[in-house]
Image (tube, rainbow, N blue to C red; front, side, top):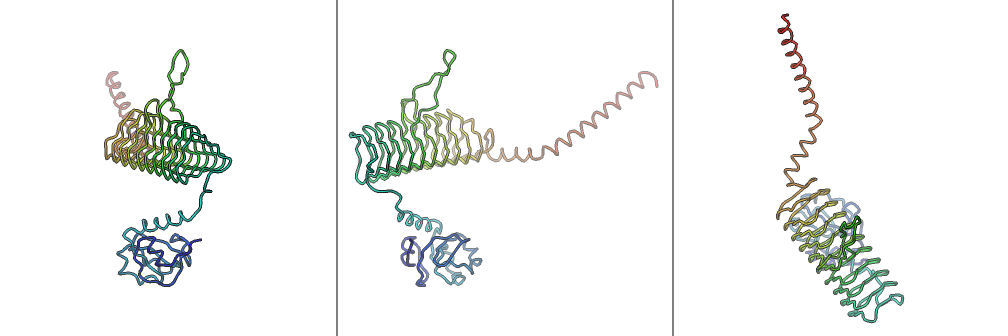
Length: 358
């Protein structure tokens, strides 16, 4: 259970405490459910006056809130970035929680040729095949499978029911959430003699340092060479990364993104939910693609794309604005069409009368 004095809280969050009221912090709170003994945070100093009745024992606030400190009777902790200060507290609380049982469970099946570093934990019914290397302090939860010749770095967390196929490489501080699949065969087939024939996928997957892959996402092995996920890239739930894809550093792929094979992605790219990338293209550094967009051509660095097919954001927004007006425009078009037909009919009758001598 959390039990922190206010000076201890200030040290953990790297903040400046305005006064020690003697309160003890026992819980983390949002502003909406603040309670006695709780600590919460606010980023905007302009909204502090709205919190005069807040029941929390402490609030992390921006540094420019010092001139307004009389709004709250509890303790204030001043931070350059209150959200980051609160994240430091979350990290502290997370480290207090024991998520795994240390050591090697007796039901784990580990090859005699596998090499495990210091302080490695392996959960129940996990299987580690021949010639696997696992770095210090890595935790493998129950029911995981690690194939032959896999290399796993230091301080990795591999949660239940993860599969890492043969020859794949995980560098340090990698997190694989439950059910992630690394190194399945790429979706490669050729149509030959009237049938889809499988193309062997003999490459691997390399996950860089500090990569996180969340639940039920799949990263396919390369046909040859490697599928590469760059350092510090974060991959959300239910994402599909095809064979021979190469990503840069610090990319973010949100839920249900699909990336077709042999796509090169730069650094700092953000793909919002349900974005689809066609294969054999290049996505430049710092590109952002809006949710549910379909990208079918390469995108230059720094661009923001949206829509299907995806196009520069402002162009897509203009098209959306026109589409919203389509019912009204169609109504006007039909009226003009009717007027034109009436004019045409009237003109025809006048010509006919003139022809027959009326």
